[in-house]
Amino acid sequence: MRGLMQEHGLMISALIEFAALYHGDTEIVSRRVEGDFHRTSYAEVRERARRVARAIEFLGADAGERVGTLAWNGYRHLELYYGVSGSGRVLHTVNPRLHPDQIAWIINHAGDRIFAFETSFAPIIQAIAAKCPQVREWIALCDADAVPAGLRDVIPGVHSYEALVAAHAAIDVWPLFDENLASSMCYTSGTTGHPKAVVYSHRSTVLHAYAAALPDALNLSARDSVLPVVPMFHVNAWGLPYSAALVGAKLVLPGPALDGASLFALMDAEDVTSAAGVPTIWLGLLGAMREQARAPRALARVIIGGAAAPASMIAEFQDRWGVEVRHAWGMTELSPLGTVCTLKNKHLAVSPQARMAVQVKQGRPLFGVEVRVVDAQGMDLPWDGRSMGDLLVRGPWIASDYFQSGQPSPLQDGWFPTGDVVTIDPDGFVQIMDRSKDVIKSGGEWISSIEIENIAMGHPGVAMAACIAMPDPKWDERPLLVVVRKPGADVGEDDIKRFFVDKVAKWWIPDAVRFVDAIPMGATGKMLKNRLRERVLDQQP
Ligand code: ADP
Image (cartoon, rainbow, N blue to C red):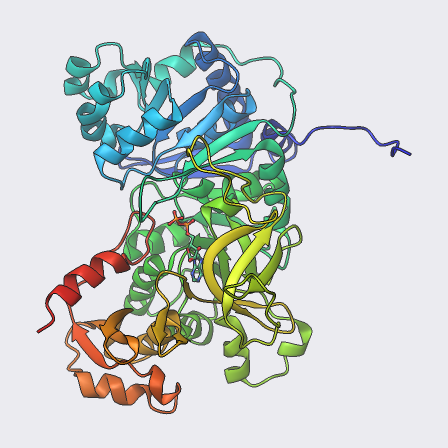
């Protein structure tokens, strides 16, 4: 027997329609590459997104056609999010931090034929335009008179976004189609081989937006002012452009200014209540908070994900500045949210140390994400908070395959192997112990590089730490800790090693500590351990 409910597909266009209808005057504030601030509203974003839909139709975009973007977090990018996906085309966000050759490869692989870019990225576009012959239309995200002069020499027909938006009337209604059709795509950073393309659908995006907004997830409401520091060019800024519209939250978009002082000032000016980003971003903000001797005035919550949040960072936000931390885990293939760490009632009464032991975990799966931890044979391991194994996931916003990868689907019996090594505790809290390629295999046992780094980050003289495996004739691998000292800190190898005593089993203590000026970081704010390994291990005596 079928249910007798109306069968409305889940459409991304419905999010911006809802926001415009019920939160039409709620602001979207953007720092622009032009250097100034720009203020718009959900009502205006809807109007201009509908014009974008007409403009790309005029440029010949077919249904399902990819429209690429190379852009910061800003209102024009938001309009493209809704105008492109809402009208049945596929928004393909590209990470400008990648090498230009890789950007060109990604654009070609995705088959982008229309491509919109921020003028600050004009040098990249100039360098790659000739390598992307299938792109027919290039759109500079600026006023008609602000298209960079040199660009016209390379791409004579380059459009101005503002001229296009001004020239086209809004479409009357958004098209309705199968909710399982593609809405957007994002390439994983691909530390090995070519990047792989994850293709989101309208259904997966709307369901993810619902789940992410829940109180025990990102806890978003119409009273929030939300600052996604996470880029709209990678995994849809963790879905915040969608979740914010779904609840009618104010959006504050930081453009290219992601340093601590700029973020602090923006948060203060726009009464930001909630912000999301990777740990390195928060190191910067915490620096600014120490300088100002206060937190941004309305900041209630930060969401930390993309890499492990060290206990020292969580403690400083919460205990010193009264800002709640929500530790989250996800990946491109998960849209990206998989787990968020929020306490249960029973944790409220425990000691601060016991509570921190929960908060350094990446948290409980959202409804919609099922998890398993398995051993090398694929057998389920117990949820005891100790047994380390590979994390498998499945659910309606988790990738089933990559776009034209030439490989079979990565799924194993319907489960997506995350490549993360985890423990799961009896309450279902997942703790990411490592990437499977980074875990240190010492004498047949595993050492979590993340846990070693987390402890090292608690040392007052340590600014950043990375733990990597070094080959060892007896144990196969042993941990080597690479440390960036805090400015002026006089900390040596023995101090660091001593710091581990009583914090981990003896055999987990790094055999050696190396000091470096900086740790190489990837395009999505993660430590590039393979590069670090090459750099540091090559210097071995
Ligand atoms: P990529 O583009 O490299 O695939 P993603 O942004 O998809 O990057 O990153 C996914 C990976 O990042 C996860 O598989 C996990 O290893 C790591 N990660 C994400 N969040 C956390 C976290 N809170 N703690 C530890 N690792 C994390």
